[in-house]
Image (cartoon, rainbow, N blue to C red; front, side, top):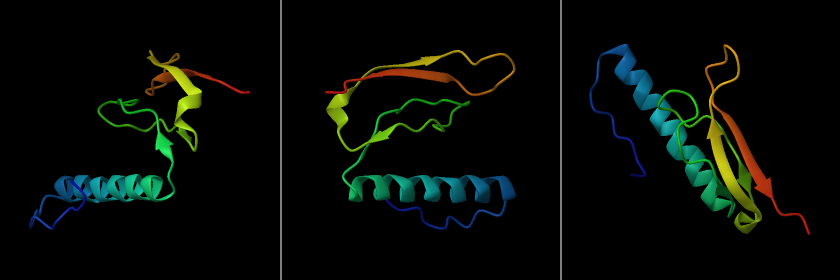
Length: 85
């Protein structure tokens, strides 16, 4: 899905969801255009992917893990391993 069309939604929450979906699509296009890789592809806050791990060299990132949130934070913690040679 590369475009979001106006569905004639009048509910402000539906319009807000449509707005954020179009922003997400724009971000993904920008990442692909720059030949970058977004490594975190699972939700990090509720049903949303807010954690960003973007690299130019996708083979250097390994063992990405989403962990429970820390204390009262509502975002998942993330850990990963990076090969640096």
